[in-house]
Amino acid sequence: MSNRWAIAGFVLIGLAGVCRGAGLRVQVDWPGEMSGPVPVHVDVPEGVLAGAPAWEVVGPGEERLPCQEDPAVPGRLWWLATRSPEVRHSQVVIRQAAEPAAQSMSTSKGVSLLTISRAGVPILVYRHGPVAPPEGKSPNYTRSGFIHPLYSPSGEVLTAMHPYDHTHHFGLWNPWRKTEFEGRETNFWEIANGQATVRFARFESVTAGPVFGGFRALHEHVVLKAPGGEKVALNEVWDVRAWNTGDGIFLIDFVTTQRCASESPLTIKAYRYGGFGFRGRLGWHGDNSDCLTSEGKTRANGHASRARWCHVYGDTPKGGAGVLFMSYPGNRAHPEPMRLWPPKANKGKDNIFFNFCPTQKKPWTLEPGNTYVLRYRMSVYDGKPSKSGAERLWQGFATPPTATVLGGK
Image (tube, rainbow, N blue to C red; front, side):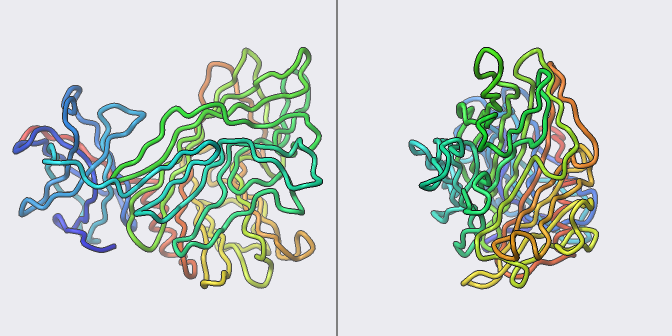
């Protein structure tokens, strides 16, 4: 990170304010050890943000950096922060900015693709238009509502879509494998038989700005062969957000919110995989890639174990690259069970697959009228994995700094 400024040991990027020349005093409290930059938010009083085009955090010497309002939560303002190890508390001022900051985090939405970029460098592509399978494969493999490619900071593609060996794999995607709906077993994961699928329905928001870029999209989990025709069993909203962490890493939040779409419950049965999955780039195999979990396990012994986080990494033409997957403490079954392909899986080639699977050990019934949320964070990097660095990043996700409005200035 470059051109960052320190506020009593913090480096702060983003957030929001009150009025030009005055502002809100905000206290930031850090609960533990973590690495920055870490997303932090504050909820400001109703009406404070009305009519102002931009906001900023103000530190000593009138140094100013931009902030950004949450599109889903009115009055919530976000910034990114790091701190010196000895700092536990600090105060900043949030106020109206003289002019809007540059939108470093951009979103470009086309007919079938949405790309999130930082300063023109692509981070990920979300496929909202239907993607047909390779020639010769069943049209049942046509799918929308997934991420591919996911890029490393150096521009290497880290995911695979419609791979030759598992055509139902889609980069980063989130279907359930073994479910029961209205008395029938339904498989939203392996879609070749035409029994069920997951579809993009619509965007709820698309966001760009100086602090983060992202989107909220509604997905429908559809039973294709229900009596009487197709029936939506589950409505799911993806909230995907990439943060302006500067050079070196891509920091991405993935939140899935799921609700039954009818008066019928959906039971997700215990199975070894299902949920938030990652199919790694083709060319990764047992000799040039691996996994490392928070409990010290690898591809060789990590399947069906539990973890707070898991590195998935390997070699590329530009050197090492990987993804640190982090599970939120409030998630079901946290620390979460994982599906990891061992080194000899898939005949020993093209065999990186990772999945946080909260239903691996026990079934889960989603009841009508309830809301179910799972939160994950990804740190995408070049180079080799760091266990200590992963733990600090996870701490910033699990127990982030809290910000409290103290009053006007």
